[in-house]
Image (cartoon, rainbow over all chains, first blue to last red; front, side, top):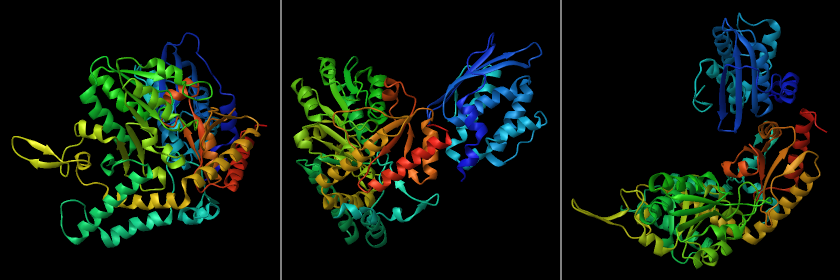
Length: 156
Length: 406
């Protein structure tokens, strides 16, 4: 296990100063997520434009550096994406977190891939994987208009 | 036994964790096992195994005798009056559930009140919550003050003619507060209210004399007392065990079974249905002997010294905040570091071989009260040394370095 791989500068930086924190103006979708194992909470706010592209994505949350950085990077990357694209990116992200050090997706540029790959070190710390995935599951839940709070005990 | 060399008795400390010597500070969660306990378990399975109870062959008789010897050791260890007052369960949680369920069935009606405290572990709340659901009972929480001590006067005020039982921890697994059980029992008994004590953290770290405490029920687990997993202990005054209905039905807890009626076994078998954790209960006797060979007073003195050393060092580290400042504190230290989430602390410390716990420690009510979502927790055991604390504090400094904190 390598601590430096887990706590890369980009993660520490996003963890310290998360982007897109708060409620975005005129949000149309929202969802809450909760990790009962550690008490991490996230609340995602989302605005979709006329063609159902993300036109504003923010979050509020309380959690560790990994969970805050993951949510922060997510809000940057998903801006402008459609629901289908978001789902594809999330699946690519989940696959990377669990199985690979690289992320494969046609919807991401190299810069975005690099950012997401900074979280790949989490795979060596199985207890921390859910910290990285909570905000993503919550985002998809918000897009799907689900009412129930996302609980990491019931999602992958 | 010399406490200075006690680590040598624990084989796990010869192993490396992430390439580093293990500094184990998660004792409130569970304790490591001395070689005498490990060998006893191994030996029993290798040379003596049999189930206990009905069989009359030599192995069964030996196992039954050894099982009952542990019961007597436990009785003496916590100074109970009768061995029938010691019931083995699978863990302390089951012991509390046993009382909540059977006591509830017999004594709790709609609107009756149960008093617990804001310090309680979920295992001393959820079983009572079941009675809120099934019997429409009311649960009242005795509040704590800023230091993390139960406000006894407030607890006293909560007692009404509807109060049926008080359930309270002996020692907080978050703040380390030692609760004045004797005082609470005196207050409760004046109003004819029985008291259950969650003694999970009490038995391994402070003196426990159930006659002196005069509590009605006292639950604890073996695995926190340098013993095996799978064994919980319920002490209950004989009058309660005689009066309350049985909990789990099956073999061993009956004396006569007919189509039209069943007669239950006498104590303690009435509460020990089915095959018990035979090997583990027998092994637990070695843990008690181990504790006795050290001596509780020596143990308390040692853990106090290490705890004070740790508190002193932690207080000198910038950004570290120790949670709670109870009047009497045992070796449980919950803390936060401003700017680093407890889970990040625990992961980083683990890389240095330091095992602590992070989270709400099964005490969400307490964390909510203290306005915290999570804390990091270092908890001291008999084998911890000042060197351990030095490594722990150095690891915290490393943690701060990674997060670029001054």
